[in-house]
Amino acid sequence: MGEIVTITYETIFELARKEKTAQELQHLSNNIFELISNYIRDKIHIYKNTKDDPKASEGEKEKVKVQLINARKLVKELIERRQTKVVTMAINNSRLKVPGPEAEETMLPEEKVLYNKTLKNLRHYNKEILLNIVNARLPQYENVENQPSAKEPKIKKDTLMIRFTNYVPKFLGEELEIYGPFEPEDVANLPTRIAELLIKKGRAEEMQALE
Image 1 (cartoon, rainbow, N blue to C red):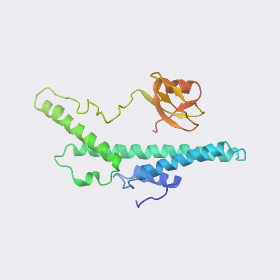
Image 2: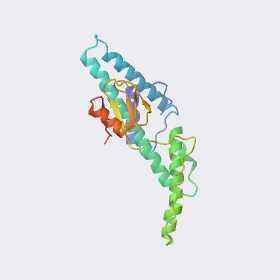
Image 3: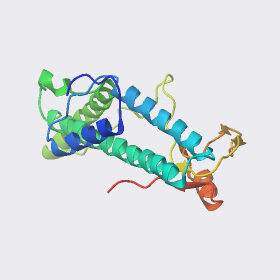
Image 4: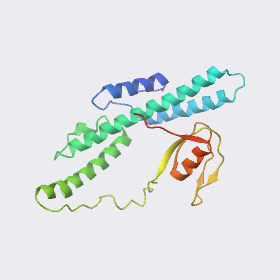
């Protein structure tokens, strides 16, 4: 696909469709994630303005809302399908001594990071687990990334992705960390206990995974 300058709903739909039907990873512009992110941001802005516009009909409001929800689902599907292909490539290439240079040609910069880290871990696993076992030795495995880099923030565990349905002002978490404020249609990945409390109060709803 050629270089993309602007993003529309139809563009996202077509990207998701082609990624779904193609076996190989599709070539995309290196800044596609930035363009899509800007598109979603604009749609949220339009939705908020339309929702608060007394002149806008309920049909107009619903149309903008549905398009925003559908666009998010398509983006999620697009990224997850590409993620699966990247990981599969890493699995296949981990069995080769020297993967071909074409392995990373169609990957986005963010996907190359995922690919290289996955490939590194798989090779280490094959060396410490697979080779030891087939040679009748006990596996000797140490996580190659068990010590997080000081430059890399620790990934929070036990979180839940939610979509806000109402305005929520700034608030403090259990460890006095600051969250918010959040507007309707904002999406956030929050600690499960906080997310479930917001859902229980009717302020948000869980983002459902695509089947």
